[in-house]
Image 1: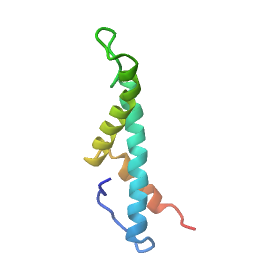
Image 2 (image 1 turned 180 degrees about the horizontal axis):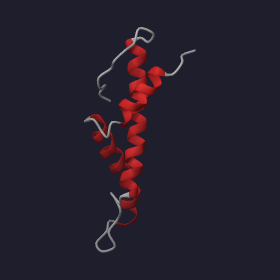
Image 3 (image 1 turned 30 degrees about the vertical axis):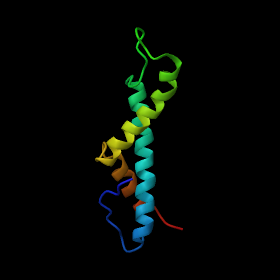
Length: 91
């Protein structure tokens, strides 16, 4: 995944910041995938549908669409999650 702007603080390394951003983007991807599912993206139409095969692969389509959305900035959820993780106390 492409790393968006990483604003590191003195208490966190660039490597750790990249890891946290990857996790945040993964969470945003999952969230967007569920939203696309709720919106009906990938649902098989009643007439002329692809049957069981299309139903099985629809989740892959939604997941890839969600990844692409996240990589171009998404809805800003990844950045918000990243900021919250950076501010959280570290052990």
